[in-house]
Length: 217
Image (cartoon, rainbow, N blue to C red; front, side, top):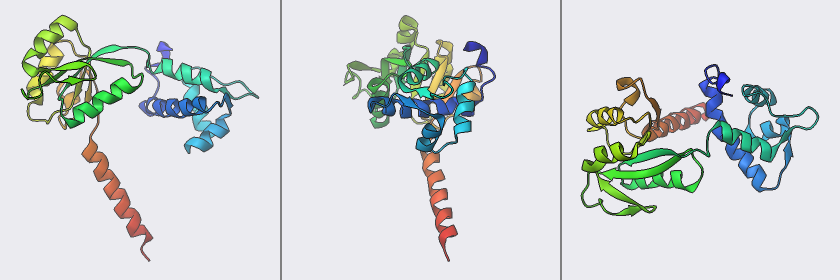
């Protein structure tokens, strides 16, 4: 499987979590077998697209049978490494940070939250999912002692340069970034998955308004 990693397009990789979600739902509803055509109809894709995506990882179906749903669900989970528990820290324990933390705890994600930090002294000492919120001053010592590899960033962009420079020096290898700071530009050596909520909302605004214009007589 590792031999394919450098040749698989990011668009295929980004579809895998959606396959995983749909297959989980099918499995939970007792569906054991499904064809690429049936799966495509449920997901709004084409059967050839699904077969192409799965063939990037060797293919999982059987001719004349289709896909075994629990088996395919398990294999895609393995590809996504959802069973791994990479040590992860969260920076920013406000409303967004709490919501994001719950996503890491509610299902297998491939990550395990081990530390939460915030510069607000009023928040320090409170518990989120059984983990104490530490003041940001304790970040460096915590990282030295516990060796996290991933950081989730849920703070404004103001202090991001100094913070990300420090985190990279402390061994952070990947970021789930909810700030507007371009970590990948400053640190091309690390992996970054950025989530821009406002960008997504503005995209929806554009699409909604342009659709309305198209529908005008």
